[in-house]
Amino acid sequence: MYDWVLKLAHSRNATLSLFGISFAESSFFPIPPDVMLAPLCLGNRKRWGWFAAVTTAGSVLGAILGYAIGYGFLDIALMIPGINQEKINWLANEFKERGQMWVFIAALTPIPFKLLTITSGVAKMNLGVFLLACLVGRSIRFFAVAAIIWAIGPRAMPLIDKYFNWLCLAFVVLLLGGFYAMKMVH
Image (cartoon, rainbow, N blue to C red):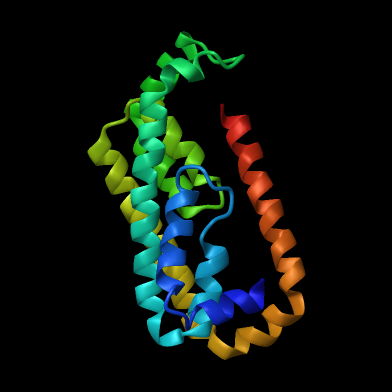
């Protein structure tokens, strides 16, 4: 898969694939776009800024879908055991006071971003504040990842080649840790 993603960096479908993964991850897909962003930046270092911008745009647009899912399907969420109107009201108040902080933190970290985008919709967080937190947080994250990969460049290739499986395992542990952290918060 790693070699395929590196080859994709030079294909005519690289940007569209990166955008699609970024969009999906913000609303329903479990794999963060960093998995594709980093190898694309390694495979075509001159386009690191472009790849970061595409990832950010796809992620923010996908966050709108996540928000819409939460906003539009509250009735279905209330059918899930453990979720009731009292908890929804608490969540709405929490997001009125600190929603931008939660979204911004999720945008920067391995916490599954889709959980916060959907939660923001359920809580009916102010859409403008939501979008600003998404845009700033995701921009910082993806431009930082791309810039680090650009700076390290080819020196990273032997390490990634050698430790790719361990890096994937570490990513999965971080992903599961993010789910666990979200569960503990709520």
